[in-house]
Image (cartoon, rainbow, N blue to C red; front, side):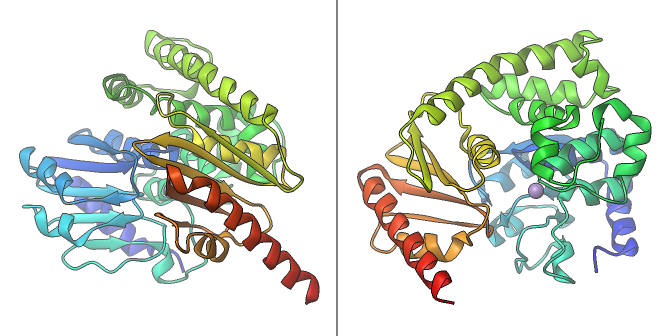
Length: 354
Ligand SMILES: [Mn+2]
């Protein structure tokens, strides 16, 4: 089970021995925290956030090559392509992930699910076990991926009792009701918006010393992060309240919004599921002819339903049992939603018959 101590040491050795590492990471708190943990430990290299696609495509290899990276780290990206691996000049490619296992040639691939498919502890959890420092950054990423680590939480509570003021059993409660959950949202929102501002926020986060610098705005760095968070949060809250005011069915919330606003579908979907655990929600943002959506359900397994709903539709999608993503041609979106509802109905019927 798990990623072995030996393999964690191997990753640490790659960090120690590299001179010009480059870090590609996913654009969520888990990805960001994984990067911060490695970068703050190594004190060298360059970070590149990979936005808007779960895939790490060949074009990113160019970035590694232009930087003359001697070691390439890929953190929390579900789909690193073989073309990316082949395209990197450096042959030290270290992939650390916890999504379904993929097969790649020519890379050092670390994933807890190789040993045990049910072990999907977040990337930042393993990154912390590699570097063994900055526990607060690790916890911010880990809880952002809906996980409460029994081995790290007691230590965290001891160091930062006010950030986890009570016992949380449900990761959703922790995320939406505790100060640590709020910190995770601050990380998440610091990755939204114009890329120059995002880059600046990330740079600052590599230098912040404590969570209180941000939460209590104790330093100019912390104030910058917090102020920007409040601005983004305002946009988010507007969308959340429109989604909640939109016409809702008994079992569904379907809400879409225009692409000129920031991408919040994942966050909106999660929070709506937390507020309405009995409803399936589909939250979409229109962008370049497609509705990019996040789909959540607490009780139903989504992938087979999604597969059925996508038949004959121009679009694609997939994901975890209770959290999926899909991209649907704008013209087909209404038909897709109807097919999705039909597919849910027939699954419910089957369930009743059993
Ligand atoms: Mn993750």
